[in-house]
Image 1 (cartoon, rainbow, N blue to C red):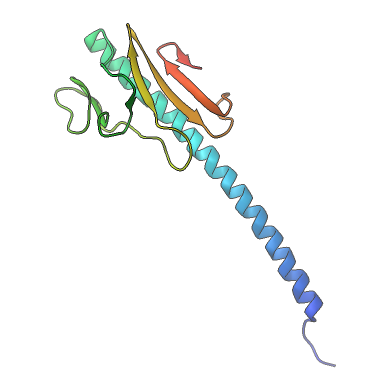
Image 2 (cartoon, rainbow, N blue to C red):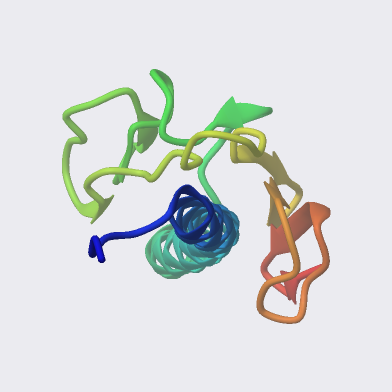
Length: 142
C-alpha cells in the first residue's frame, strides 16, 4: 500500500488555508483603520495642547484660515504662529502632525474670535466618535 495524500485531501487543506488567510487579511485591514483613527485623535489632542500653551502666552490663538496642518504653511507652531518649517522663538510644537494616509481628510485649522476650530475626519468609530467629519475647538471635540 502506498503512503501519501490524495488529491481531495490536498485540495481541502488548501481551501482551509485560503479561508484562514482571507479572514486574517480582513482583520488586519480593520486593525489598521482603528490604528489610523487612534492616531488622528491623538494628533488632534496634541495640537489642542500646543494651541492652549500658545494662548496662555499670547492671549490669543495663532492666525490662520483654512490652514492644512502638517502642510507647507503649518509645519510647526512657534512664538510667531504657524510656519512652514524652522519655527522661531518659543516652540510650542516642533512638527505639526498631518493626517495619516490613506483615507481621511487633511487636518484644517481656522482661527475665530478668541477661538479656533480644527476639522478632521475618522474612518470608523473611535473614542466615542462616529465615522465622518468632526471639529475640535477649545471646548472639546464634537
